[in-house]
Image (cartoon, rainbow, N blue to C red; front, side, top):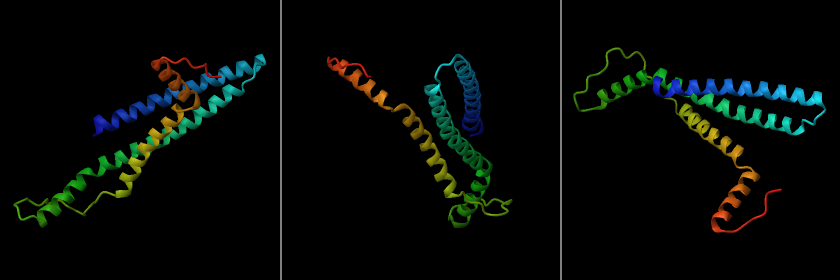
Length: 155
């Protein structure tokens, strides 16, 4: 779990954060140059706000998913010992009981539900970014061209 799930998620989040930060620095520099030239920066600022909101709505759930996975990784051995203890006590088969069981530890249902909810929120956030009016219109034009119809350009 550590090397195939946690490590790649953390690495991708760090790399994405570095690229996002460098992109914001570049956008701020472009905005400064545009303001000095007297060009309107309304659309650029709107884009910057949209990117900032999207990055927060993507990064926070990703951090929560990673923390839930760390919780699972840290407690997994204790959960397995507790399960083994429960099975050896209730089972009619000869399952050896663990000797070093200190306290019974069970996974918290809420943590798993939060993990799955945050996973879906990342997808929903991504779809909100992608499915704008212009995107829907582009798909309409694409499918109409496949059907052989010509539609006017989006204004």
